[in-house]
Image (cartoon, rainbow, N blue to C red):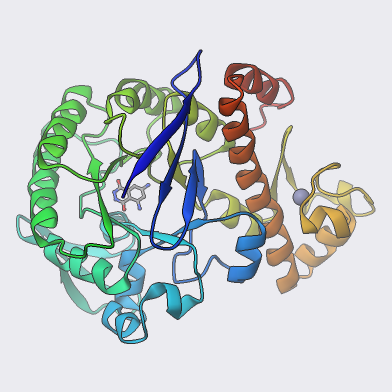
Length: 369
Ligand SMILES: Nc1cc(N)c2c(=O)[nH][nH]c(=O)c2c1
Ligand SMILES: [Zn+2]
C-alpha cells in the first residue's frame, strides 16, 4: 500500500498525505468512523459516503463471534456483506478480547477467552487473527497484540510488549493476502523505553504502517501526550501513523500536530446515542431542558443534514421520546463534525497554516471537556 506525503506543515509535525487501497483513495489526516458489527450504528453506507467517509473500522473480535468471519467470507467478504465500497480497516481483536471477553488465560500461543455473547470458549492466536481478517477481506489488517490497561506494572508491560512483538512476527509470517496491508501496533504502556524498544523491533520485522496502541485507556491526558510527543515523530515517516481508539476533537488536533495520519474512536457515534453533540465551542447535552423550545440548529452554520433541517427543540423531543430518528440525526451531526474537522486540518496543512488554524480552533472552544 503506497503512502504519499503531499505536504508538511512548516511550524509543526503535521503532514498531509494520501494512500490508495483497492477500494478507495484515503486523504490523510483521516478519521475512521467505527463500524463495530459491520455497520456504523444507525447509518447506511450511502449516508456515510455523503458525510465524506472513505474508510471505516470493523472489529475483528465482534465479527469473529457474530456472524463469523468464515460466513462473511462465504458471503463475499465484509465490503460486499455490508454494502460498503470504501476502504475498511479491521482492528486486531486485541482490544475487545482484553476489554469485553472474560479472559481465561494469556499464554505465549494466544489468548483463551469466553465470548461476551454466550460464554462459549475460544482461543485467538496471532495466526487466527490473521485468518479472520483475511476472511473479512479488509483493506488494512492489524497485528494481534495485547492492549494493556492503565495502570500496569513496568515488569508486566515489558513482558506483554515483548510477547506482542513475538506475536507481530507470527502475524507477518501468517499474513498471505496480497491485497491487504498489515500494520504493526506499538505497545509499552506509558514507559518510553518499552515503547521505543517495541517500535525498533516492529520496524525490523517491517509493516505497511505503524499504530500506537493502549492509549486513552485510563492514563492522564498529560501521560498520553507524553507518549504521543515521544513516539509519533519516531514512527517511520514514510508509512501511515495510526493512533488507535483516540479521541476527543482536541486529541485529534494534538495528534495531527505531532504527525499522526489516522484515527478511530467510538466517541462521535456513541456520544450521539447518548445525546452529547459536538460543536465548535465544545459540546451540548441535548436533553437539557433549556433546549425544549430552542429553534436553533445544533450549531448555527453547520452544513450537515441534521442542522439544515431540524431544531434543537425537535432533536431534544426525539431524544426524550427515545425515538430511533434521534440516534440517526445525532450521529449524522457528530460524524459530520469529526469528518469536517479533519477536512479543515487537511486544508490548513496544504496551505501551511496549521498552527494558525489550531489557534482558531482553541480560541472558540469553551473547554467544557
Ligand atoms: N484503543 C484501542 C483500540 C483498539 N482497537 C486496539 C487494538 O485493536 N489493538 N491494540 C490496541 O492497543 C488498541 C487500542
Ligand atoms: Zn450539524
